[in-house]
Length: 427
Image (tube, rainbow, N blue to C red):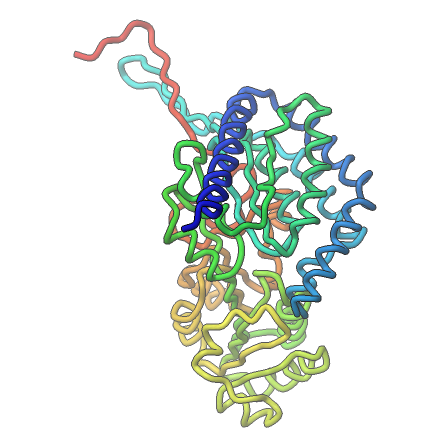
């Protein structure tokens, strides 16, 4: 390592620690704030986002131009793009989070022991949350807002593709929270695209309490491998829609088309369609025709291709692929048992749906599919914290330990026990 490289590395490490120290100080203030102060800050941040729409759009144009030069196309470019509607969506998300009850200080449970001790379990903030994410600039607003609502300080390390957009969004957030009297360091963006900054974040266990990665499989794997800090993992969204033998055809057509094609680049997009062999001949052709008309590439097993020769042959790799594109793998299975086996074997424990009018089949699917979100007769694209009434989300946690599913403000809290006595001593 040359002296220049060593100096640069040392400078970055010092810069990251300075960010962490500011965040720790801000977290101490946020933890004590009343709900009204955080609500006012979120509303002010939403207002500043709307006022700064032009500035944010200009920054996004820079990101889009750079991405195009690098050859980024399709769904990834769509995830990066902002327009007035999407910026309004970010601002509305902040307003929605502001309207949520403040989780901090909630008494989750209380009981009195025979010796007279009153014990309460009370929600408290986690502290400092490091969020590492890729192309989506909207995560910047969602993450910042949810951390404020839950009394946490946020250190955001956005993707290099969205660097200009995220910088402009954070500037607007800061104007709002500072105007409302909150510390400026309540929300900080790592001010470099250097990937080494991620490595420094993952070792700052004395300053950061939780790491939340949101992005592709390689990012998640790196964070889980290198982090010295507990991780709330948002793994890939390898989602399934299963059309059961008792499915209503029109529901199945509408749900499947929406689950795949509404937005192909979101983590809740269906990537594999499973169809009960009992209705494959009647249900599969019109569903495939709908998808093809929407310009979706179809890859299927032998039975699917026998019903529709235009379908491309699927490989073993297809069943384990999150396309994030207008591509769908299709397989005919032996009823609900076959669907459950396939989902539990190939899925990423994110979001899976069954379409059926058979309540027993629905309940079996809901009970036995081992995913964070399981739906009956609805699109997998409802896998979204806002759709769950959380205002926004940082991601969908796919692990078995809590939090699981959409991670909103409440999920960004821990708890402590408060014990009140009258002079008791232990014998």
